[in-house]
Length: 301
Image 1 (cartoon, rainbow, N blue to C red):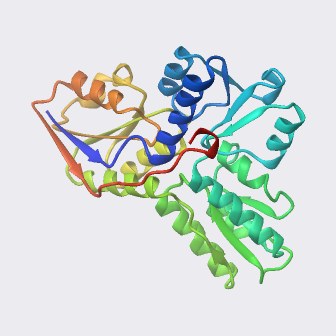
Image 2 (tube, rainbow, N blue to C red):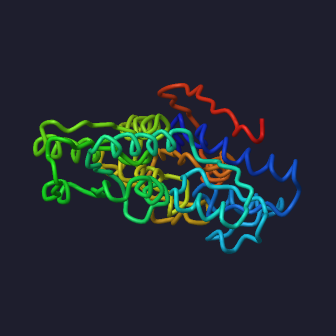
């Protein structure tokens, strides 16, 4: 069996920054350091940080007053910031800068009287945070069906923003429908470089493999999109968290296995999956080299 590794894969700059934030806070301030929700959507990353002294909570009420709390890479709404101030918490913000950019766009267009279409998934932390910036002006558009029926007070002043971890192809279709209905639509495709690159890379290797394994968490948006991209190319694809999830029947008659991983997946999991397959050959197919770097929050520089 041959294994074909898709590149780029794994940690993006925003995830590296978020994990570094937690580790630096533990190093400088000691344990406990509280983290609101999963710092990134991967249980292996969360477990590792827990073992070093990080305490993960769902809500700020679970953080003792006056303590230090880290906001996850997905960002939070203004209401969460307000609540943190009311409780006297010391906030370290690990929001990905590309998510912050979308928040600022929402504020800008809302202040100019635009209705905001946010293309994204209900309940995702990033979507909740972005919509919280301008809740009266924002409308969530999850799919083409919603794009075909959504209404706004002024069809001449509309803008479309996007969650950063969406399917590039699906988002393009939704945007196309919105532009047909609202010719003056301002479109801001905010899908991040890492999501775009990983989807393009996995699409490229589907032409060479019989099966694709996407390594990552079930609740990771970008991992689920990678699986969908591979399936859309006509190749069976499965989202797994590690070697234990691989089922023998998936590999029957398979000569070439493609492997990729989401933007919040540690590379060691890729190594473990490759080792478990016992391939006769491993080949890396790199579509583009990523050199993006995000500086730490001011409080940690």
